[in-house]
Image 1 (cartoon, rainbow, N blue to C red):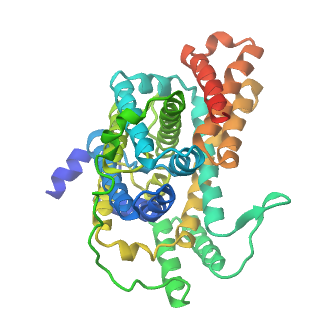
Image 2 (cartoon, rainbow, N blue to C red):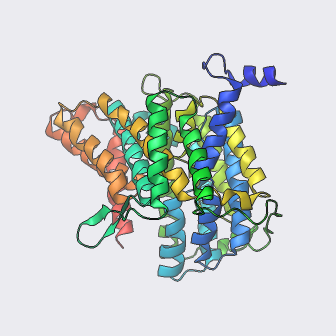
Image 3 (tube, rainbow, N blue to C red):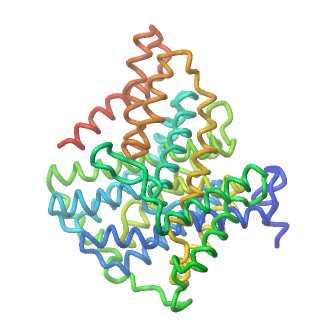
Length: 435
């Protein structure tokens, strides 16, 4: 059985091992397991049943991971996206006063469009049209974004009314982040296999020993019922009957489209999968995440997309679809062992995210900084992702600037027609968000 798995996923060709893939899958799951608790909390603000959202989150994430691993054979995990779930709850439901049932129907319609444009390979064409320099910028930008999230989650940086952000107050659980960062950094410098994962385990143990992390009162619990949200989206399709709701559907589509595209390209760069500026099996990868998004809308959760935390598993050595399969299986187990997941706090995962950011920032060396027509849009992508707290917004800034700078450099003919199309798409995208 083990040999068949090794052959199917091509572990020998990828110069990885069964054990390393298992460790990578576990590391990815630990890095993104927080979504099982964060997503119900965010969507719960819209009035959705938190228990049902918890179960929907786990099942949709598992489906996407399993498809990504088995069909596309990539070590990339999927789960409901963080930015778009906040848009769902706070902008659409609370801000626009749209019932969550109607918003969920909007996600369902957006996911159907998503599947259709994936089948016709429109998404694949767009990703292939992105220049190599911008793809490197996307990878680096995601790295800085991940590190920013890690430093914020760990308390190293905090909101500051005078300077926007500032250094955090080094007290309490923040010291767990500092400890984990030091331990993980030492292990990485010494090139210790599984250094990121070992760092997380060591931080968890210290947190429990010092009483900063509470031991769970129980280990096993049954999965909450899906009944409050299951197939609600289908029942409310008729509610999408105004220009405002059509704009909401398009926003769900655009944000998820470019979040996923940016994440896939960035992770493929990190893992060394890109060949001649193209990502092999991109069609299968895109179909996996679009199918998971469709299933998620039926189960009762906001749009599913590829997850930047997959970079933690890749950093540990994950190179095949087995990594994603392991992550998917753990999401299913997570349904029944949810109390144990509470031990992995944000202070435990923060050091891992920061170190992964360091690893992904390496791709900046592939950008031609001497050509300003390339340097300016690349820089806007790299800086825009962490500062706007959005992969898609960072992409938009760079993709709008790229045709302008290339035309200014009298290199407009070198710009792919799709990149000119994306220029106008993102102009419209920003206009929609501002209204």
